[in-house]
Image (cartoon, rainbow, N blue to C red; front, side, top):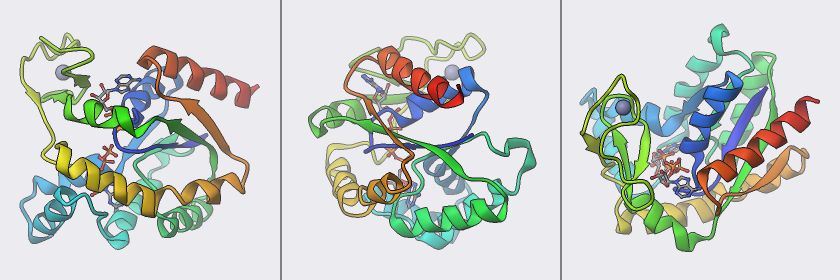
Length: 217
Ligand code: ADP
Ligand code: ADP
Ligand code: ZN
């Protein structure tokens, strides 16, 4: 099954995607991660993307759709994709449906991670990740000394340049204006399940597990 993991910045989409990968043999397709990979190329396009990301604005639909289409044609991940951070507006949601139809696939579930905006700033300003394996930690909630992945044994944690208070408020505004309306689009298809994402990481994972198990049974 293909899943959209939905919620504002800092809701826990990446964290819960890691859980899904381990437990349900799914593949995470994060447009944010793909864009950050693109930034490393140092191209002209990369510098445009960098400006938009640091301003908390959305990157153009053309760029995003071409990143996505490349992946949807990949048979090795067919029907086991978690879309993380995509779609981000109605246009992207409609394009995704068209592309999935073209590749004889669909979305079975939208996990709506619900959080109060009051917790978001702390989650995002504390977010760090292992420079080697990209596992995400939080300086406030589970301060990493070493990466928990034994293969890494690194002490190097990196922070995203857009994870600062000023950009977060812009990202939330973009989320409210452009991204949130997608929920109505998916609700009309009866595929949205709400998840209380204010609780501990493990408790959120438990809710997600039971939703997926119910759907499969
Ligand atoms: P998103 O992908 O939605 O932007 P992340 O999964 O990267 O969010 O999580 C943002 C930060 O909040 C990370 O530092 C992560 O460790 C932390 N976090 C995620 N889920 C929870 C939770 N349920 N409770 C407390 N902190 C969390
Ligand atoms: P978060 O997990 O905190 O919500 P992401 O890593 O998903 O953040 O996104 C970081 C930034 O990358 C966004 O603020 C936006 O500028 C850009 N971005 C990511 N995904 C998309 C998308 N589907 N469409 C447009 N811009 C995107
Ligand atoms: Zn690591």
